[in-house]
Image (cartoon, rainbow, N blue to C red; front, top):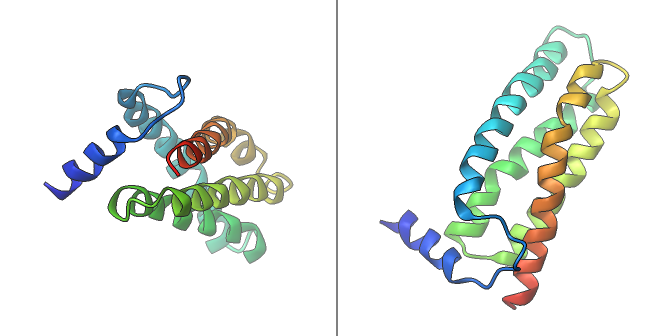
Length: 134
């Protein structure tokens, strides 16, 4: 019931005309989580085998953590500003991860492109929603 109330709260927020329909988020994130699972798994496996240094895996860990807490910040705490700051960290850590992994595992960097596009869009959307609902 609490989860339903949180999503009901989100529906009441003002959103820009260019915001995607709510039903689109589930399929997009499902697709992205499959890419994340495969590519991040390859990074953590390579690190476990000693093939890449810790500083390469670090932004991937930060990204997973920030991605994981977004829903709590946005829907449980109902805090648009913290959610906006968090999604900014998701975006920054993703760009950092792509940059540092490229010399080691090219395909992992390329596999992040759909994630990068979506998170870039989601960051702009979140800041817009935060601003118009201040």
